Image 1 (cartoon, rainbow, N blue to C red):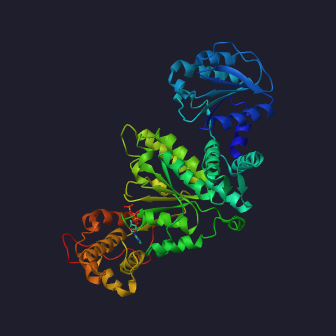
Image 2 (cartoon, rainbow, N blue to C red):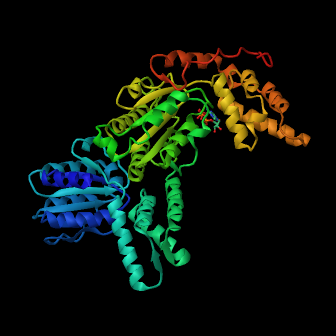
Image 3 (spheres, rainbow, N blue to C red):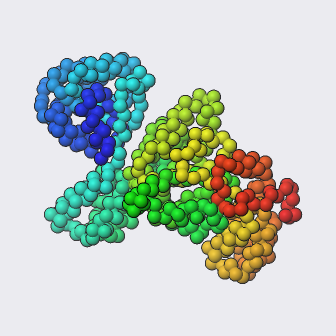
Length: 514
Ligand SMILES: Nc1ncnc2c1ncn2[C@@H]1O[C@H](COP(=O)(O)OP(=O)(O)OP(=O)(O)O)[C@@H](O)[C@H]1O
């Protein structure tokens, strides 16, 4: 576990002040207990309810009675005479007090010449500027595969001993069960396994789905990410041949053989383009194509202020994505939070810039197999740093579908609604829908179906033609915006479809005159 190695090195290097970000107090307590023993140090906990207490490690010493007050506690730590790890639990609210911040700074300075390390353990990261240079932050990742394997083994041992339930798991199913639990905290995973056993008195292959559902709930509760099991297929995406060929080339690029061949892990795609032309659909199809789960990150919510601070939100989302890896992380409407990072004079532009910085650094440096598909409609305001090499493997521009692509999209949507595409003049329909997006073509099919249903007849060409006539495509209203995006995209992005941009945009108010 690289984070544990980092922690070990920082303690060895006598860093006085560390900040561990984690919800999992119990799990981190256990890990720190082992670490204190291996470093031959005493272990202390501080909390506002119980003050400073010696809780183990290798030695013990007495602490003054009254240390619930944070400043008293910091003074008592300075007086400790033995090397120690001191864990301050949920200390972050007290970092708003200037007196506490000053005391902590002085303590950090003093501890540099000792073998004691203070660790702030908290689910939220908030560091006052005065301490930024004194504190090293470690994001404690969610439990790894091996952590969950140990948990599962323990549970199986207890179940077998108690004889109250049965375990019917092959090695392969156990592996899938653990993978399904990746992304949960240890106690969430424990609860999920317990619930699965309580359901029918056994732990078996059927529980994989149950654990996945549980995970979906837990991830949704965070309010930032949504979990989609792989479902859509690339066959449901019309056109976009360049993009499909690119994905096809990377079909086996996540495997060990690709690494041995010298290929880097695929990093991600940035999909830019016209609204309703299949960016979201492609993100879903990528996950299905590679049989990886999909996590959708809502950029709007990162900044909404509804759930925690923006930076903390992003770090949390990244932590979950990494623990579920290999996974596709769909960053939807990336422009929502990021456009105008450089130019914005708004009061929160500092926060926006910091969130953006965190995202960029992660995109550049991530090592976990998290394939990012970022999508954006309004592209001109995107910060240039995002487009620089090294962040994404490729940037595709998805334009309005060309004639042949429109025919294909009609075919897909007719087929999805159990109609035989051969019974319709697809070429004719494609010719009538210049300037239509994929979403508008889908809507035309649905509107045609409604009309036919109301008439009590089967869907015919005439219903589709009428629905098309009555559609006023967005590309008419957004004509100037789309032209600007196309201009901007030239030379900066790769077209998702061969043959470049389709015919010109329809002119307003040419209703029916297409
Ligand atoms: N190329 C396409 N092939 C098949 N269906 C498409 C295509 N493009 C769009 N659609 C249909 O339109 C729906 C909406 O498209 P999608 O949400 O993927 O567009 P988008 O580019 O992400 O738009 P937005 O930026 O508004 O989210 C899709 O669910 C799909 O049914």
